[in-house]
Structures are given as structure tokens and as C-alpha cells.
Length: 125
Image (cartoon, rainbow, N blue to C red; front, side):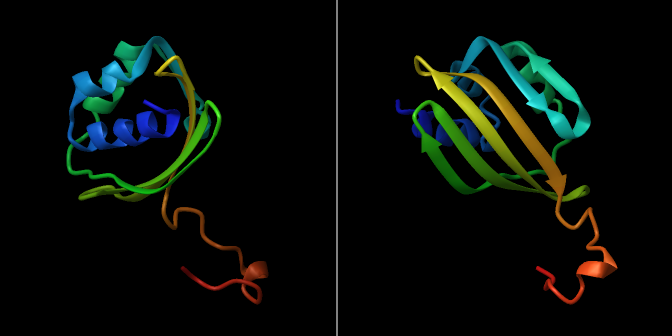
């Protein structure tokens, strides 16, 4: 599979809760960083567990995937029944048909209110 196909499959398999399928796309020593919460997930098993243990009630909608060689960027929306709507922008590195690294920026839609000084320049989404 091409790098974009691998990342597309990652999100499809996450949505399906196909954890074995997700694992097949990851290098055993994959490292995924979450700078917003200052966390690093090291290893396939830990990445699978942190996602499988996430409280149920979520779905995933892929908004876009773009690539440049082995680097693939995805933007997804993740609505959760109890926790609101989240967005993630993820930078994936794919080598030899496996995801070897990722850096994901997660945020809750609307969680950082617009400051008053920008009111004349912006519109609410």
C-alpha cells in the first residue's frame, strides 16, 4: 500500500475498532507524540491500548489526507456522545509499508474562545 492508503486504512480500522488491523499498519516500535498533552506513546502495544481503552461513544470522520513522499498529514473530526467534538491533525511517517512515527495535535472544537481584540476581523464557525 502507498503511504496515503496506509493512513486511510488506519482511520477506517480505528472507526471499526479493528485493533488487530490497526496493529498491522504500525511498526512494532512506533512512536506517537501528543504535544498538546505532553505525552509520548512508545510501541505498537501501547498505541493500541490507549486507543482501545478510550471511552466509547466516538466516531471518526476523515476530513482530508495529504502526502509528500513518506509523510502523510490527516485531519479528522471525532465527535463523542459525552465529550463533544474533537479535531486532530496528525503527521505520520510511513516507511516500508508501516507507520513508524506520528505527531498528533488534538483539540476540542471551540475550546479556545476567540479573544475580544479579534472580534472585528473574524467570524464564528
